[in-house]
Structure formats: C-alpha cells, structure tokens
Image (cartoon, rainbow over all chains, first blue to last red; front, side, top):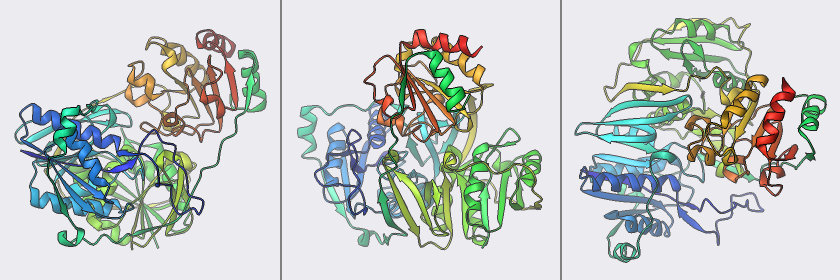
Length: 249
Length: 310
C-alpha cells in the first residue's frame, strides 16, 4: 500500500506572528518557516505504518511557493520516500488544495491519505474533509489512535465530549490530532539521503484544476490587546474583588 | 433569502453551541430554518421548535444519521442547501467534521470559525490561533459557515413558534460506522458553555491535585479545564484542554491556576470577561492578561479559596 501525506509550509509555531502595516496579511518575509506541526504528526504516522510492514511507500505532496520543496525535504529526511511539488500562491484556499490533492490521488492511487487536522496559519480545518468528499472516500478526522486491517481502519477521534471510535472503509482520508504520536527528528545521514530522493513537479493547469480564490481577504488586523490588571495580595482580597468589583461570583 | 442552521444534538438535547450559532445567523435578519438530523430525534425536534427566531424545523429522522457520520450527513446538506443562501453550523468537532465535506460536495469554500458577521457575504475570523483577525468576503452563491460559539450569545431556547417538516434521508454511504465512544461523564457544566472555568496547569504537579480545583469548581458551578502542559503530563484528560489545540472558551470568569500562560493557552481563553491568575512565579506571562493576579503557591491559595467560598 502507498500512503500519501500532504504537507504545508507555514510560519514556525514558535514565531510571534506580525500583522503587516497595510493590513494586507501577516509578515512572511524573513520569518522562520517550518512544516505545519500537525503535518509532521501525519508524516510520522505514515512512517510508522510503513515500518510496521503495512505500507511500502510514503509519498509527500506540498502545494505553495517554491520554498515548499524545502518542507518536502524535511519530510524526506524523516524517512518518506519521494515528493510531489505543485507550485501555487501561498494563499491558495483549502477548496483548491483539496481538488489538487484529489487529482494527485487519482494518479498515485494511494490506499490511505494521512494529513494534519488543520494548518496553523489559516486554521481552516477543511482540506482533509474536502479531499475525502472529492474522492468519495471515507473520512476519520482528529485521530488520536489508528489501527489498520486490510479493508478497514479503526480510528479513535478526539471529539468535544471525549473520544469516539469509528470504523472506516479503506481507502480513507485520516486527519490527525496532536496526541497521535511524537514526530521523530531527522538524523544527519537521513538528511543527506533525503537530498537524493526525487521530487516531481506538477502544475494546477496540468492537473486541470481551477484554483481561483472564492474568498477575498479584505483586511487582516491585530486583535485587541488585553491590558494587565492588578495584583491582589491575598486570597481574601481576590474573593472580595470578584464579588464586589467584578461581580462574577 | 433564507438561512439554514444545522442543529448539533446529543442525548436528546440541543448542544448549547447551536444556540450561539443561531444568534450569529440572526445577525443577517433573515428567516432561519433548522435541520435536525438523527435517529429517533423527536425530543430534539420538539426543543428546536421552541427556539426563538427559527421559522421552520426540518426533520431527517433516519438510522443513517444516528452518529453524525460525515459521509452520511454531508449529502443531506448538499441536497437541501440550494434552497438557502447561507448554511451555519457550530465550529465544534461536529461542525468541523461535516461542514467541509458538504462544502466540497457543493463546490463552495467554507468560511471557518467566524467571530463576527459584517454583512451577508463578509465575515471576520481568527487566523494564526487568534494572533490576527481576517475579514473575508465570499463570492460563492451559498455561504457555508462555521461559528465560534464563544463569540456570540446564546439564542433564547423558548418562545419560538416554528413549523415542522419531515424530509427523507439520503441513505447510508456504507463508508464508515460508529464503534464506540468514551465520554467523560461529568456533572459539571460543559467547558465551552460554562459561565465560570477554573483551569490547572503544569504547576498542579499531579492528577490527584486536580481534586482541589474540582472542589472549588463545584462551589462556583464552574467547569474544570487544563493547559496543554497539564494534559500532556497526564494530570488531566484530553477533553479538559483549553487552548489553540484544545477548546476555546470565553466565560464570565476564567481562573488560571499554576498556568504560566503560553501563547497556545492564551489563544483559548483570552476573550474571557474576567481573568484571574494564581501563580507563584510573578514573571509568568499569564499575569499580563489577568485582571486579578495573585502571586502565591497554589497549594496554599486554592484550599484557602475553597474555604472562603464555603
């Protein structure tokens, strides 16, 4: 079985995001970029499935500006086998991304697609579900445990009230949540090896997908800053303030 | 123009986030209809009929909707959505699971997690974990929208006078099935709709110490939450997690106990009305957002708070 893992290049999660002065977006120039953390978990899970003997190839796909190929290299250094790169503007919407990925899946015919539950830049949480719809496959979102058999995947999902376990038919799209695993670091020999692994390039035109945006971003602004309040000196004063001043208890 | 709201329900009751979603939909001042899909849902349908500002309740009472499986629900939404200009659902794990699938089937770009309705095609939503707010305008003929429930008040659950219409199901996709669920059966209010939340962080040191917070929570009628650090350390269950990767809450009162205030946690609670921080490290970033900060050892302060509230 082949596993397809879409990966996105985003601002590193440790970086404090700055909104551009002209309110057209957030500052991406000279900002440290990295693989979306949820996608790292997806890559790790695919590699574990391969290492357990349930898959024979892990293929990464990234869609975005040229540097997205670096993100593919990061995943190849973790142990993935090869990459597919599709050039597109940074702001390409989940609907278009899902269409592109579905076309890639038509060509590659993976038995399983694993992706992050959301990208930490636009926080849309849509691509996996949309891709699954376009392919007519089953979907299992927010996975915190996955076990595979020949025809099915048993997936435990993190839902609002706790956990839910579902059985989905293969091929499936699984989107992963944080606690599924802890991604490995790439070793130096694997980073060297990754440089020789192939990355194919495709275009939206060649895949026959219209990636025109449906949403226009009118403005991006900073949220209101919350001011620090006061320090109280004792529990008694705290209770008094909450009762008399804030009137919340 | 008519708006459809997808009703999330659980054990015969409407999930509170649905009522916040109705308020968001109501900002457009157009008729609102509600879809209740499930198996044996008479009770929920009756409750939905009572909700103010709903003009019609569509009932899809059929076995394939029993566990809200996206592969079955999305085609149902796809089938009825062309009768509406907007489809709203709560941005809960329920809404996040089904709505993008329905959006893809309709070939529209969903607008996720809105916090403000600006006009019928323009909405505000947080990006980068709430570190920036984007105002977006949709050109799609039908707008599929999920709503951050903490950004809107709950609609009145009574006083409505909706009509009811049964609609037929779209059948089972046969793609997925429900196996089991493991829900934390708490008597306390649900985290995202509680008026008061008391959360513990890494400073709690142990899961057993969360009992201290639970005692205080029970006196205040509060929900108990936790930071990701506390969840990762095994002090508290997953569904307690407040933050960018957990739940977003905005109660009247949020008490952060032994929580340093990492950006990822702040993203989940900074819109609370009043924030209290109890931490022994006076440099902890949580104090920068707290209305009332108490620099103290939580193992002294929390029991004292408990006794003062008795």
